[in-house]
Image (cartoon, rainbow, N blue to C red):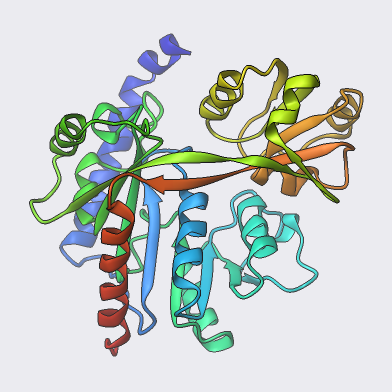
Length: 339
């Protein structure tokens, strides 16, 4: 894999040139950006997957849902439907994609929609739902929409300043595009990250002087959730199980389970993978199955003895309060805007 990435370096240079030209055309106004009357909060990254976008959307829902009516708009990656789709009570994972379906299943007060055309998606949400705030998932590169506030995620283990363009690296946008973000969140940090390390990393990210950088860890729930009951995670000490993952980067989850002293098999699949009948049959022969919440949306009802583990962002220091203050102020400003 390393050798193939090196061989593909010329392709990554060409890709980078195209990205720079595209951003330039937006920056100088040759390509238009549309601002909407509904405050929009964008969550995204510069790389391909694995930074914790869905847990961040869920964090924002939990913190803002008491004060605002919220809609979530995403592309619905790898869904089997087309165009704009608004989730109803009979929505399926094939219609919405796994991440949107997960959000719909957890938050019944939130409108969930998918559309590759984010401008059209926002317009439809304004007409059909009239939310007070729209959360846009994985929309940092979708520059046709000018967001009220944008949160850029990058991981502690692979921050964007150490990355490179696809296919040699994992960047799908230029590093300097990070300067468009209202706030940068470094995710998957060690919980005991020192102040000196935070300062050094924030400097390495080459942020704007007024640009806030926050740090968060992923926290795994000590209780597993199944279709009919729950199970304490510590109960896995006495049973054998198989971990199933179809996410971009399962390393943190795998390490978390190993740190608990558990012994398990691991069936790893590509991100957003739709499981075949042969794969499902193999899983059903394994006994107790543990998976991620996103994978659970695609596996539920197809395999037995299946549980999932929840994950959430936990901000270090007072980062949560400071970020939410920024977001609430942007919502107030955004709600005063008339296009």
